[in-house]
Length: 241
Image (tube, rainbow, N blue to C red; front, side):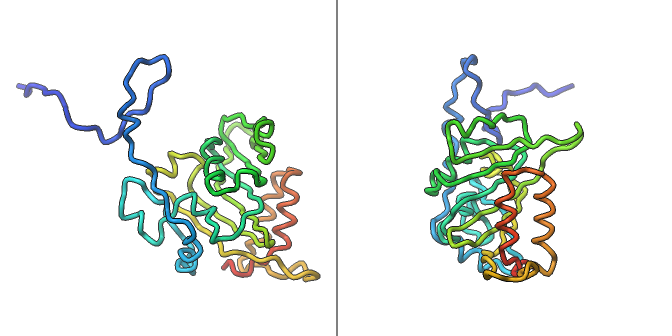
C-alpha cells in the first residue's frame, strides 16, 4: 500500500523565473533574490599578481560566501578594475550575450563611451546596436555549415598606455553565467607594447601565443579586426608562458 502523499511546503532550491506579461502570477519571490556580490574596487591587480604563475581564477558565486573572499575568485567587474589599467578599448568574443547586462558592467566601471567590439554566435540580433550606442559594434558570426557554433569566450583589453591583456574564460556574457555558476578564467599579465623599430619576432611568447592568436583572429576575415591584429603584432607577449 502506498503511503498517502502530503503537500511539499519546503522552499524550492531553485527559485522560479518571472513569468511573461500575459501571466498573472505574483513575482515577489523573484524580487527577493539576494543582491549580486560586488567586489571591492582597486584590488584586482594585487590578486592577479598573487595568482602567478598560473593566473587561473574561478568566478565568484553570489550564494557562496566563501567565494566572496577567496583570492582566486573574481567577478566580471574586476576585469574592468582600474588597478589593471586605464581602459582604452576592448574586444569581446562570446557565444551567448545579454547586451544590456554587458553594457551595464562597462557603465558601472566608467567605460560606457569607450570603443567596444563584440563578436557573438547566438540568435540575438544586435547589428543595429550602434544606432543607440555609437561606440559599440556587434557582429554575429555565422558558421559555414549548420553544425558549428561560435563558442569562443575571450576578451582583449587595450589600455591607454598601449599595453594589452587577454582573458580566456568559460563564461558567456550574460548575468546568469556570472551570478551563480562556477566559471573558469585565465587572465594574462599586462602586456606592454614592443619598443619602436623592434624586429617583428621581438616579444613572441615561448609558446607562440601571439602568432597563434593572430592566426585565429585572421580566420574571421573581418576588417573590424585589422586594428586589433595590428596592435597584437606590436605587443610583447613574452610574459605568457
